[in-house]
Length: 199
Image (cartoon, rainbow, N blue to C red; front, side, top):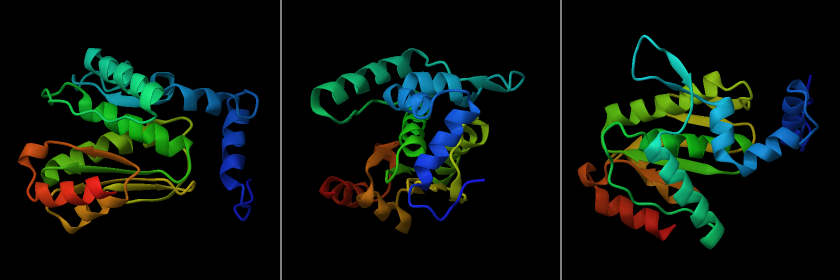
């Protein structure tokens, strides 16, 4: 049992995960921190389109692979990722972004990942992607709490969502990682854009 009073709680949790998976302390976690695709493939599950198939190990589709290649190149060249993409229906863009945010939040402390969707139904649908990743991840980090649209991890990282036009959307100004789905259909887009770009 871990001592939750220790300042180095998160390092202890990571070490425990590594021991449970039979690798040297820091080995598995550090390798996953370096490669999102490996983490996604080996630890994350997604819902298949065919309801008879159920959950699937996540293999990037063509669109997701292109996004991952672009993101990796941007990190190498400029140190961060900024991608604007037209959204093809059911192309896997939101799944990719939520998975990438979950990767950062679950393996690193003090990350604020935030997503805005244009309507409440989409907000919940997008969050369900993240929630499923946490529920099915064999290495899932412990959470302080999980609400209807937010995961708050013990490592002090948070992954939340809001609907455009809601008071919660103003929280995007604090985001380390930010995703805005269906910008063109979002009420109050100018106000959200101003607060987000200022941060």
